[in-house]
Image (tube, rainbow, N blue to C red; front, side):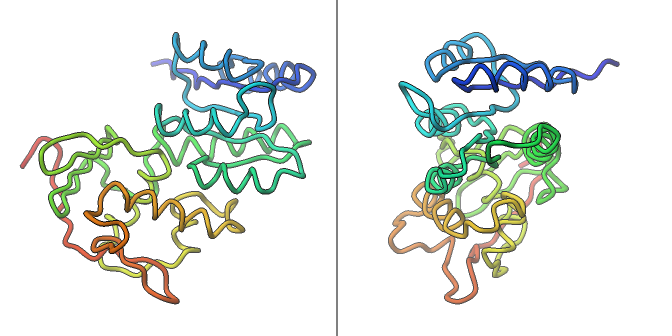
Length: 245
């Protein structure tokens, strides 16, 4: 059986970087599609869905952060940001909206390949480390999460869209109900140690997740803040084998 090639979409307006990088990634076994800006990337997405997007932040027209938000919220795609050294604020914003990682230019292509493979292991192409029993569904307080399909449904069966980062955060909580988890532990489980400088990314993802699953996100009952400790999922969780109720 031939393993299917991993498809990457590389979005960068600098042809002098984009073209040799695409060639290098192709030599590493990836199927690479190039786009010079956000509009071309959106056109590519109409015809094909990549496994991961490599996305430059600073581009003419629609910037990378705007496209990043669309890729995560509307398409649930893993994203690695390609950033310049002076764009620390943009990197933080990118992580807060759900980007999986970032690489600072100029970078070593081998490092980028390692990060691509790491992100793919944490996302749809591999079994997330936070959920070794991913074939089971989770049920909690009227909600159901199907990890294989990454589908969250409410008590009436309505699907509530969640980003890749929100999905991993929710699985982390559901895998450890009623346990207090500090930010460092959550960062390790959700985004890896590469994001250890960005504690606010966890706080913002928790806030976004609360807006989707709490009756009143200003007075959260499910995901509770433990002052000085981190966060805790304060409800019972049932695990149900796929196809069973």
